[in-house]
Length: 368
Image: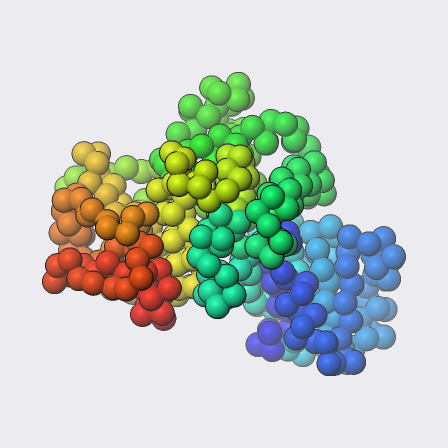
């Protein structure tokens, strides 16, 4: 946080941004925290220039910055008069593209840190894997005393997001309509996005569906995984695959209450796929992630690329995963010589010279 004058910590609501920053600063008397959801704290910034002048020797944290997006234009001149690194921390529940082009107003002055709900590597010593998979990584959901209270929290999170958070970002979108789309996306979790089909189901234009999906993506609720582009002489799928980023929210949208319910649900395999992809991309931040699929159905769930290096990842929710011929064909198409099948197994083992079956946590540790 000391590399730039401003550090932005971004992530979904209730993922632990405020807790993290307060923990870093709990023993410091040179730290001021303002929650911009509170009118009393917003009033302290009626004259931002004077506020920062009075507190020029302190680090100021502005939480829920999306509630006062116009502040960014004033912060630019304030920061330029004193470009001390670590001077300001802003926390937001939406991407910077959504918070009024702040990346342009503070260009060269701001660094970004994305914070997700708990990753499995952060909780693996405290809880069994299936509990994490069912409840997801939001702290209040994961740490609930039982699955029932966890579900109640997640249902309320969804309702609050739809009825309050979207409105506070300045969008006049009917909560029922956006909720229907969110539920539809849960039902096609891990599948190719078909805008026209969603448009017909919601009885709105394709552009409206695109706007809603962009909004859900920029508020960290969904991930649109892009297809891998390659000039290999084969027809490739060009639409993204859609994922609900947190498995707990996915299961709440689908009314999956217990792990046994998940075991028998049609989304079981795709839920595992989303969990693997989300943990992998959140942990391996230097790698770019894509999926690969030809028009004939040969595919790789996740292609990881870093410079000239490429790795193929297949996700199988089975302790005895069956690897399709299409996976090996796809690796050959892309000239990938290193592949992993991530499955809920206890230990790794090879299935060929190029491909290993491996637990998620071991794979991530190997790749770091």
